[in-house]
Amino acid sequence: MSPGRRIMLGTGVGIAAAAAGLWFGLRRFSDADPGGVDPAIEAMFGLTLPDVAGKPVALADFRGRTVVFNFWATWCAPCIEEMPELSAMQADMAGRGVQILGIGIDSDTNIRRFAEKYPVSYPLLVASGGALEWMRALGNSQGGLPFTVVVDPAGIVRTRVLGRVSEPALRGVLEAASARPA
Image (cartoon, rainbow, N blue to C red):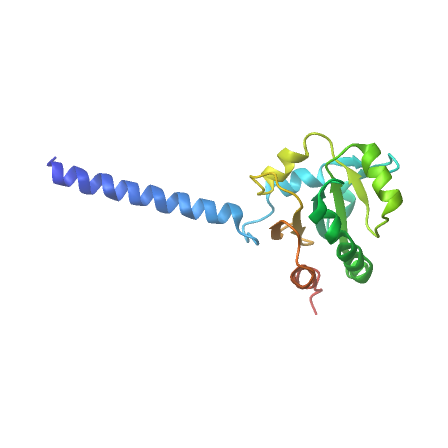
């Protein structure tokens, strides 16, 4: 094979590999993957976490609803700033099958004290040390907070937000995800 032909073949293989990598990357991080339920979402629904009172809460109980997994911490200012908006959305949209779950990345004592001072209308759950891995599996490679993932009743991820949520944008996603067919 001539050197020119080898260069062209190598270039073609490189372009094909780059295109495949881009395609897989876009599919992995798309907001609404029509291919089915993300294995990380299945894993989330397999968890049981304690609430602020120490009572175990099986996340599988929320399967079939529009679920907002909101990862937060008591020391995270943007997390705390968005909580009143999340609380209002929970109160407004509970009748449409929306369930917000605050997954606290902190000690049970800190989360319980926080909940006593600042009550919200949705469950605050205590995550163990595995929470950072759960966030990474859900698409948050930086491990930043707050991190919010919206899952529709079919278990499909509708959006992922790293950082403080925009209340109007999140409300729009929730309305679309929880819309009942006519």
